[in-house]
Length: 123
Image 1: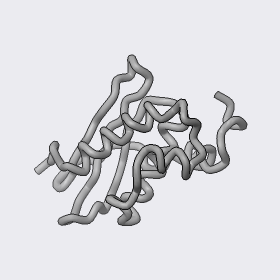
Image 2: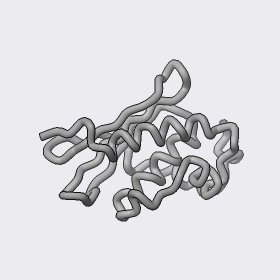
Image 3: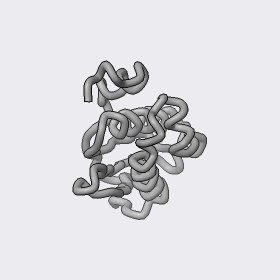
């Protein structure tokens, strides 16, 4: 996919994936969803201090829209907007992502929800 075909907000996010990577150590929770064989796999890692998310990272396999949404969500998480981030439909509307990509955004949501539930906490 040519970057020229992407909405400017998606292009900007996809061009500077600053929150990719791995977090380890105390207070880190992980959430993962999807399969590479199906085109999308996402893993979020969040470092918490109490109820506050102080650092967010992700690893993702998917299209530019998938990676852009992961980047946008990581930015929002670090800004303290966790529960107010909306739904995949809201994200698609905000970033002008085609409706055909909604299935990929649902995978992102599943991974993020798993991380926010804190099911895999590193102690």
